[in-house]
Length: 145
Image 1 (cartoon, rainbow, N blue to C red):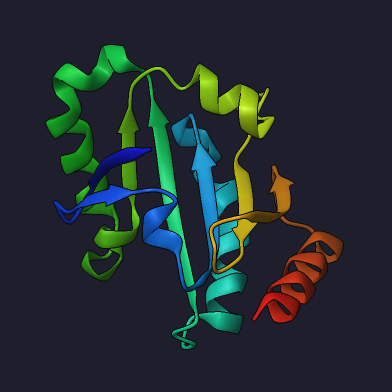
Image 2: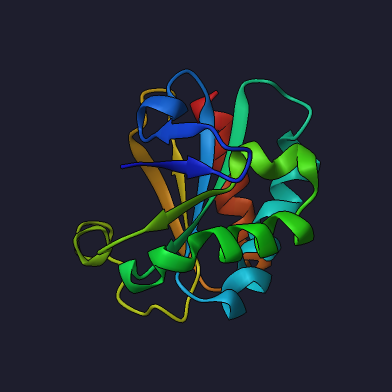
């Protein structure tokens, strides 16, 4: 997948992920942001200062909205700290293939994937983080590094 980050950079996945253990968070609806935050915030607290880790958020938006993508991206930029703009990569297009391949059936949920340094998915979660899933995520991340 190739798309543009809020910072303006073109990002290619999985190429951008190589060399780091990366948490990739995908959402299809704005209401899933709290779910993503429930994963990202603890992950940032635990691994955020370690350069061997990265976090990307990928809002998946139907291709019909591409014509007003500048408005949507501008709104996101205003609500997201500037230092995170390079890690929010908005995808506008037909995402049904990604849904099928990655097992993301319910578009009301957030999905999180932990990838190893080669971009291979090693762990998957969905919805809100819970203490047991957070523990699994952290243990997997520590093993991968």
